[in-house]
Length: 333
Image (cartoon, rainbow, N blue to C red; front, side, top):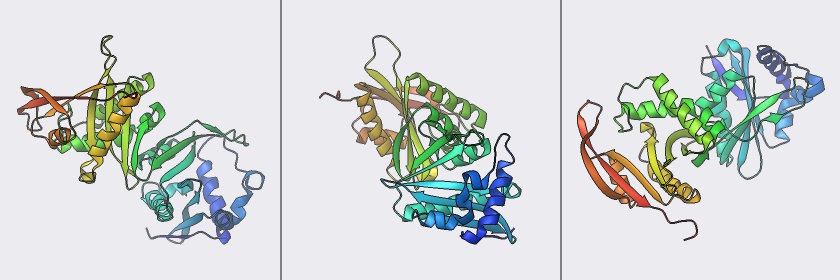
């Protein structure tokens, strides 16, 4: 399959309209009335140019196959718009290429954050965006159109760390599963042994999402080059006499994104979130000799003690675990 991605033109109107109509026809209840609701499709390149945006079209073997657009908003935010590919090209990587084209344009123009909207009926699109590091953000948008459309908001920073609320955590489960499995396969000491089944890892993150919804856990995620690459969490102590304490868990950075300072940045931000949550004593544990141990010591964590043979390593050999603690100043200090 020979694919060309080029700048979209007003003359592509028939192709754009046919593409969107074909994609929407896969879902019940969607009304496609161009002149009544989307007259801009007649001159779409001009529409985006007038808003300082950009539009692309994809051709596969000479046939119209896909489209994508992007448009700037305030404060370094760019919106990704109208990501569509012909059903026959699904699974070919065309959607990946189109999204990458729009994201790269936005980043070169100074984007610090990328956002998009997706109809709540477009389950396949949601999986696609989540695979590329987008997480649910903000309330559902009501369009009041002929299709009675509701839309999920998605967002991600180009780089940085954010707290994931329950909807964001749920939408990040697939990517967090990939990160957990990659770290376990790489030998990380995080309760699991390789090979870690996808279903087991996904189940863990589903529980984390539920805890985030219940307010018993803070979940952080880190992005680098617009890819979700790391995470760490803080679980609040449940004992009535320990309202001031929390445990740091699952500091994970995908092996392909290490040596970028991401783990240190995650731990720094986690301490800030602990302070906001009025948690003044933090604890954690890690396998003796892990790189994480050196990081914790360098960041001022205090060793509380060691237990020989506490957990198995990837070779199923019992290894010692070291326990750490650290105090966090209260917000009023």
